[in-house]
Amino acid sequence: MNGQEIPSYSIEDHQHRLAAWSASRVASASKLCRFSVKQGVAILEMSGFDAALAKPEQLPEPKFIDEKHLAWREDVIKASASLSFSHGVAAKLINTYLKARFVCGGYHQHPNVEALHPPVDRLLLNQLPKENVAGLKHEWLMHKNKAWSKFTSDDYQAVINHFRQAMPGRPLWEIEQYWQGYQ
Image (cartoon, one colour):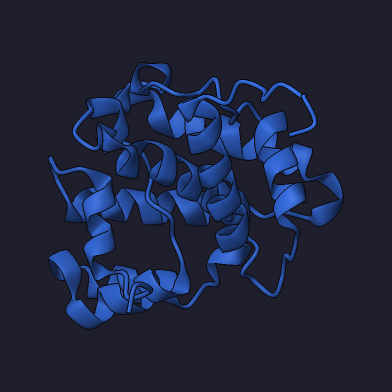
């Protein structure tokens, strides 16, 4: 070693890096909005998604999640200025970050985490009408025909509302049982 002291590195830093990296990779998958991991991490951090956001108690209560999510999307869109993020791309970045950080971080049973919006993509939207999940085939087909990366705020919120309708009283992350991207 060259005698330099190793800087402090917390589990919160480690979790943040993994969540920010994965969110940036996933959200930049759309051909309509490409960006680097470095850009994605900077956008997340400018929007308040950093290592300090580490406890589920820091997340909004379920009754406030939609209002807060809209504010988060607007912050991400503003921070991404030159990249032309839609509400769909902003949501994908946020939701994948929160999924990695909290849902898969051992807090999946916390009420604030159960209310988090899951990532939305073509694979999920294609599978929901095939399975006629909760008898909402017509609604799923409407969402399927719009690209998630082009979602307006209203388009995005309509999908989330249908997730809730399909999963009453259950954590929203459970809708991802229909996501085929793991195969």
